Length: 64
Image (cartoon, rainbow, N blue to C red; front, top):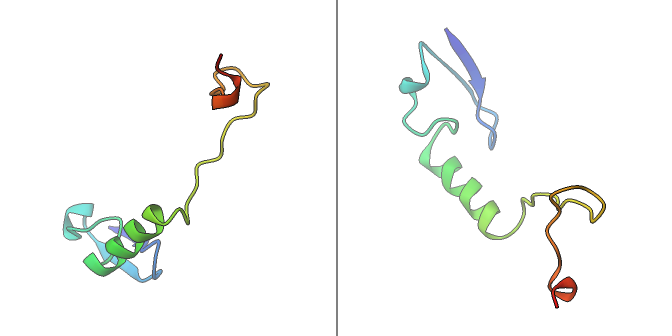
């Protein structure tokens, strides 16, 4: 038995497997579209690595 919450509306979803929810990890197509809209409007951001860390991406001003 799997019991999880939708990351958007926090509705509890219970079932035998994730196959019970075609829009997993969301409870509905509506919640899936809300999440997509948040990504497209930059509400979610992946933090950039600082310059001192290995593998950091250079800014355009640092490129000759």
